[in-house]
Image (spheres, rainbow, N blue to C red):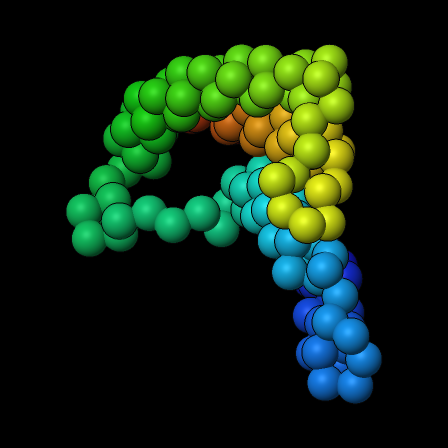
Length: 145
C-alpha cells in the first residue's frame, strides 16, 4: 500500500524535471511499472480483506450457504483463469530472462523484474483465491473457519 508514495514521488520528479531540467526519459515508464506492481499486488490483498466488489442487488438476499455456493463456482472459474494467466506469465518471464528482453523505449529497461513481479502477484492471488474456496466449501458444509 506504500507503493503509491513511490508512484507519487516518480510523478513529482517527472513534473519537476520537465519544468526546471532536461526531461527524464525514465519517469513515465517507471510510473507505469510502479502502477502495474501496485495493481497486481493489490488484488490478493483486496480478496484477503473481503473488499472485492459484488453485485449486491440479488446477493444480499441470499443465505450464507447460497452465497458460499455461488462464490465457490465463481472462484473455480477464477482459479482456472489465474492458472492460465500464471502459465503465460511464467513463460513470458522465462523468455525475458533467457533473451534479456528490454522495453522498446528510449530508456530500454530490462523487462524481467516487472514480469517476475507479475508472476508473484498472480501466484499470490491464486493462493488467496484457493483460501477463499476452502472457506466457501466449509460454509457450504455448515462449518466456519
